[in-house]
Image (cartoon, rainbow, N blue to C red):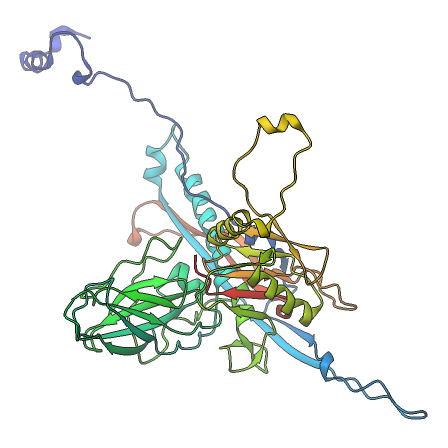
Length: 487
């Protein structure tokens, strides 16, 4: 440095920063940079599990024809001598699944790439992050996507409770409820169509009333939005539950925030609409696993709202907001599901697809109930000093088909309160079903880069991870669902 070139003003600035000794307050320290880290979990077991196939030609839908089980409608095989046997009956069902686009976009400027040089590859990170988010969203869509509307919930039944809230005596309370699809749970506000009812609280003086509200479960719904009103005209969102019941503790005067107790629930606040269904049917969605089981099939093949076509044949058990229970050494609801599925198909499920809530519940029920588990004494005496606490249930024995074991699989895209009994193979003669479930692609996931222009901003790269696909469920009849399970 040439001291002759330093002005007196520069010396004055330097002197103003001088302190006795050197401390951290002087600002003389290095910058220790570590690698860029990500705290985004990318757990997509459902999309990683299903086989992926490519269509042989372009089409708007995947189509197939299924022979359905009508064994109990066949003629008697007993005929007299010299008499022809009865002709067996055959039932055919046309099925179609629409192809839809899944996409997750990204944008990175060239300046951002330059400024990150030496620390991270900004473009690569953005593309990789978009792909990961696409995988997460595809996993949710494969479970909860739905192209048809849910049935409208019944008007809730209300009950006055003298304690537990802050509702004044002799106050009218209006409550509305709407049902959500799986995709509505994850991506949007779900079905905002509601049914209202009202109750006038009792006339005791205490202003501590609460109101219980309940409705019947909607087939295929994974959650319920609850709305409240003081006059039946102005409505506010109160909460979302995984079971068809809710307790109103106060008449709302503003929209609430969706609860954080439901994992991955969309943060979009739903709005009340009593006139029409404007939320549960996904115009650009394919039907995910749950929808392929809960919906009906029209004569032409597309799926339609339950009750308006031919039922899928899947076994549905409504737990009506109750908890799982232990009985006879097992879980009552699982045993009932297994029995119905065996009586219908002579098969045992491959796995129970459950959320972490049900995984914890099942393990707690079994391990806390001596009648539900057998403990074996350890033969290794050294093991007594190395005992592992806790435990979890990994498989379940199907008592309706002795010897068959069913895996318990925790899926982040299975919503709390729902259990899906999935059957992966159908070993019937001539079934022609290699995989019950598969992802059929017109074009599997790829990276598409858009062209940039001056009008839309500076130098940058815009693109997206994108696919055209649908879920194919060739045998909904061999699967089952338990819904509306409380924690």
